[in-house]
Amino acid sequence: MNFGLPKVEHAVVVVPDLTRPLDLEPLLPDVLNELRPASVTVVVALGLHRRLSTEEIAPLQTICNDASVTLRQHDADADDLVCLSDEPPAWFAPDIIDADLIVCLGLVEPHQYAGFSGGIKGLSIGCAGRATINHLHSLALLRDPGTAVGNLMNNRFQQTLWDVANGLPLVWGVLQVPEGSLYVGPIKEAFERACAEAARRHFFEVATPLEWLRLIVPPAKASNFYQASRAATYAALCKPASIVPQGWLIVEAACHEGMGTGSGERAFCEALKRGRDVLLDELHQSDRVIGGGEQRAYVLARTLQNARLAVVSQAELPELERFGIPIFRTFDEAHRVLRLGAHGLTVENPFHQVPRLATP
Image 1: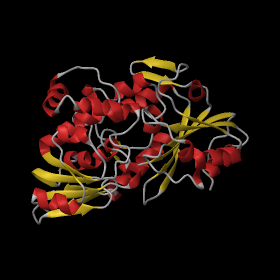
Image 2: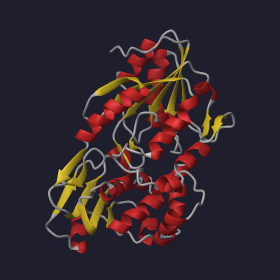
Image 3: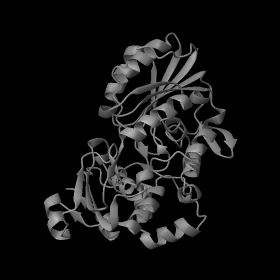
Image 4: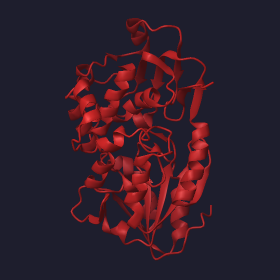
């Protein structure tokens, strides 16, 4: 496949981590081949997620070895990060700043804050320093009404992503809509075209409000509750929501990593300990500076204003029970104990099929 990439001497190729499972074969080898003879570094955009294990990164390492290019995993706390601007704070590694071209490979799918993931987000969060990530997840941006799943109109979070990347070299997008098309070109143009398809493909309408939703989390986001919780927050906070007030959202996920092991996931877990009411009060009234990862606790608290939440998992998740979220071993057990009504729906992939209420 030919992507029409500009010819340069030094390039960086940004790829997502396992939470956004982009099939890199043959996409990445084709990109690397087209960049020859440039000097290329491939960067795994981790943000504040945990590093990939040796086993997890092995397929990517093989691709890079075959193409004779450098591979590294992003470190948001690295000592050599450089500040490009103070407002908004924009911290990046030298290889990104010094590149002639940055190629972002990504998935364009619904996202809680940016409206849709992919685009410049893989760079402005996935490859940025902790100060940048914290700024983007500030309470001021979280409480802004434009910061919402599936929304790009007047979305300050999305606009700030572009502002953060403003001082970087030329950025090119190779963006996949799950179950859909591939969009290639200058990053903003490619992203806008991909979002138009994702908006059509990844939301569906229900005729009347539902009493419950069973949200089956796919493996890529089922490894820990930090990721899996997105299923509930997308369903509860998209507009107009498909669930009745205080209806049940049942999130079904393995959560074999528990709440999560990355620094962002640990911050989320610590924030939950403060309790829903404290988090809601801070969200609406406080200028408290929060760390990356904590934002998910505030969004979860907001979700629990609109709906009730239960989890189906074999994992031990005592933090959730302290937050008032019951844990069940099977959906049948949850159905029986919660006395779910007849008017409900099972959603097989709530990230690519977000339900919302049909409007007249």
